Length: 308
Ligand SMILES: [Zn+2]
Image 1 (cartoon, rainbow, N blue to C red):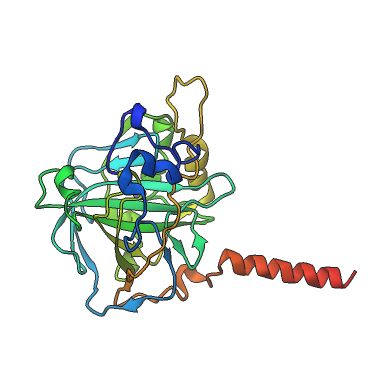
Image 2 (image 1 turned 180 degrees about the vertical axis):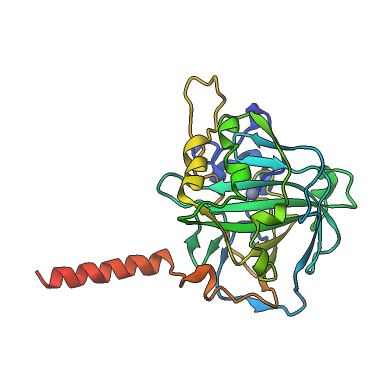
């Protein structure tokens, strides 16, 4: 997730070794994972405890059309949608009311998936983060000093054949923010129309960190079990049309694989909401880990070779 902007001189990146996620700790000490401290993202496995007190969150203003305009921006690390001040989230075990600030995306490349969190070892094509700041704080600096200063709602994004017309509010505007620093106005729409509205009581909860510098451990994560579905062409608009460089750069670089690596959970527990299905049957098909698929391929190969 992205909440803090940096100047070019102290910038971070995803794909070049001197500034990629494994080197972030050199510039931002709090990005160095310490033992017994949970950083994000993590892999969601089946070792979760169900918590019956975790019901649906209250999403204030998500069903209505906000006044004014929203701003879509390419900050060189992601595409962000700044959504004004009319929405907030609370309930569902959150320690307070949090004002919605922005949402943004993480993705892979033309042939790779790019969600930040993984499910049973599987990476989804994309992940969307809705960033919310605890309303008692006057600014982000204060929120970053509070162990539960931010609440992020995370949604996996998977791909199907049909277009997602609601997602089109964003994807159709991406060509206007192809290069770093570009912004464009978007007419507000009900944010709920983007979300899996029939499955909003199914989620996972843990305390973790920002997934971008300064990697502060101040985030109450809510990761929804059922993904948002978009089309192949809507996904391709992210993987082929967004650049991490400015329009006048000598060499333009596509923005690919803007996700941080998976971190160990140590003793941190991940809770499942009352209605969560504990990963079984989500996304409408069995989840297979990459390793399992690989083993299956080896077995097939072995069968093939033994017939030669
Ligand atoms: Zn994010």
